[in-house]
Length: 197
Length: 331
Ligand SMILES: C[S@@+](CC[C@H](N)C(=O)[O-])C[C@H]1O[C@@H](n2cnc3c(N)ncnc32)[C@H](O)[C@@H]1O
Image (cartoon, rainbow over all chains, first blue to last red):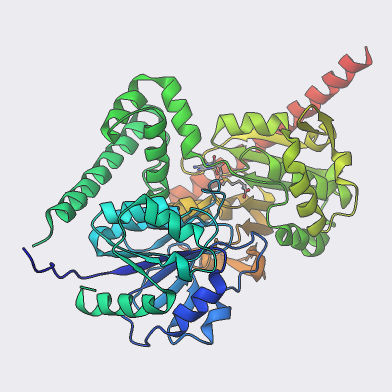
């Protein structure tokens, strides 16, 4: 087979840490209004930060942005944030669950926890994205997504406010797309529409 | 047609799910602990972690270990009961209890508080401290329960890492505490030992929310960060249990990401402090509560009466025990 098999993607997961607010503003404000997949985001935050983080992006984003609720059904075209201080996981029936188990990679919510559980559920129909950050959370999860047949994208470390998280992800597994921040949305949109990048 | 790799990974996932169901069934049949209606994603993480730690390759290998190796099961049970907790977790919650709920309790002759899923006890000592400062502790009985005996034992000991006290002090202050937090514990090496007086009115007991019954006539039930691990059906059963265990006007307090609003018992509770998930049991005349068959209702009232008797007996025993203690100390 020399022509790539056309996949139907079902969800996008994004992990972002230090430098995240700027990166997310850019990404979320350029998402098209008719984007057809759910986007699930873990952003590392200070544990005491308020619950109203999604509000920060709601004004500039054409899609609905909200904090994921326990047992909430995941719907397309909606952007979900993990609540501060809880791990966010995806269940087989495409609903969210939350957990207060110990921090992973010193983080709760942890990117790995979301990515690994989403990969269990979505398998090859998952797109995983790692953006700027100063640690290595997300590397394991992205590897799992790749091993499960999903597609992986990492922000080009040279364009990242904090390069360690992207660099670590690139070192941990083979990444499908390493692209500058401003190109990430167009790659995702194309994948969501055509199944190929 | 899919890539081979994708088919394999889908297949693998399906098999894993089957193996997990078999494992949970085995645990239930052998030990009576019922995890079959727990949220799967988190269970799966725990299972994979224990597998890696024990050098096992497949979930089905674990079934054998669980059945034939009690020590292995005990360890695994500790994994499954996610005991992570802190003192004055979510300070704004404890601040609301202090500012809004306490005044409602003051007039009561006697206060009964049930901390369900109290884990290693941090929540218990937080509540004892708060009630002591509000001068209500003397007329309060706290029932602290969990289904993990290992966690309960730690709760009874009340010995925590000194390192954590910095965070707890800050939580305490954000929760409206104005005393010196370090007066509530003594320090030994790198441990903080909570003052004995804080457990004077606490009864620790093993109680499984899935399989055990009503705890009678509570004024306040606190059950935080336990229900996120249950599926809807199980959550509903537990809400029913809480409803039957609360007295008129009793308070139900859930974790910050938990709600009763999606449950079929939603109408039986009104918001008291919405943002903090503090609810108040609403009095609905018996006819409008979902009709429980006559026989079951009779059973319920018998169970409730006997559980009140039992908890009173426990209280008497506790008093006797502390009397014996004082006599022993005096000698
Ligand atoms: C994450 S801890 C919450 C501790 C504390 N309430 C807090 O919010 O910090 C969850 C606790 O629920 C307990 N638990 C889980 N399932 C239970 C059940 N079926 N019955 C009683 N306790 C249970 C676990 O053992 C664990 O200690």
